[in-house]
Amino acid sequence: MGVHIVKVPDIGEGIAEVEVVEWYVQPGDTIKADQTVADLMTDKATVEVPSPISGRVVSLGGKAGDKLAVGAELIRLETDGAASAQSAPEAEKTAAAPPKPSAPTPTRSETVTPSAIDKPLASPSVRRHARELQIDLPRVRGSGPGGRIVHEDLVRHAQGAGAQPEGVPRYIERNDQHDVAVIGLRRQIALRMTQSLRIPHFTYVEEIDVTELEALRAQLNDEHGKARGRLTVLPFLMRAIVLAMPSFPQMNARFDDEKGIVTRYGAVHIGVAAQTEGGLMVPVVRHAESRDLWACAAEVTRLAEAARSGKATRDELSGSTITITSLGPLGGIVTTPVINIPEVAIVGVNRIVERPMIRSGAIVPRKMMNLSSSFDHRVVDGQQAAEFVQALRRYLECPALLFVD
Image: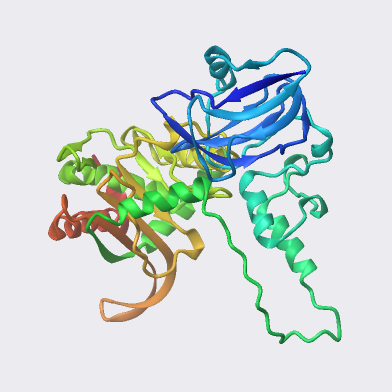
């Protein structure tokens, strides 16, 4: 019998350490070659690490949430051959597959061990959610592709399991509590939000009359929706941002506060915040200035789906110069968006509501929507921010201007 040590692979791009997001094996398990043993996370991506050989797990290099240096011992295996340690070339081969974003991965290796037989298909975030709800995953019926368990399945299961039988009092005192470790993408989001809120934010809110815009959008969808795809408000807002940028170049920028340099960009790379099972991610629509409404809409849809399914690349999740955030129908009346550092501006879209407004002395129903936008006060003055949002308002309230050069 020998011992084989699998080391933390060199994922590249100067990454010196990774975080253990989740283990898929435990000491004592017998595993096969190419079986996924762990998910490791960098600042933006989660990488599945397979075992290069078959063997029995002797020990793990850390627990979920621990940080491990590249090259450190990840897992120790007892094998039938001679003792060995994974060489650097082998480690690089282990990490040869491109890293995936920190969202659920669509598939897992089908090579299983006795401890993993009939292991339900679920993403790391779903497994954590199940632990938080104290749900045994094998008892949950998955509604996702291939029987994959998604968050909605957990909620349904919990509601079913939590249904009170007749005769059982509902008003009972509870004293249970659960500690939930903040690890993986949740930890990265927490760190990034902390860094963002260290800069001096200010938020400017303006209401927009989108009655004409909504009428135009409905007409375009009726005439071209089947052939070219349906339009939401986002492509119109993206076009408005593009048209406003020549007059407000300080908004389309990234601030390196360590060097004290603000870089302004001609290209408008718009980040579109998207909620995924793993947490909030910001895929990037590159060169929005070169795309028409339908091209922007198609790219937003493609990127959002890639982020939610775990197929978005690192390049698709970085490099934005300004961000749009929207909660869709849940958008509320006013929000205070957090800037996506190192950017200096973020535009928040609130929900559209029909309200009575006074126009030409008459009370008429109008469709109104607030824009809640935040700015880095070190770079953007209040008046500049107000003028920028008013420019967006002008384009959105008179959408014909979006098509005039």
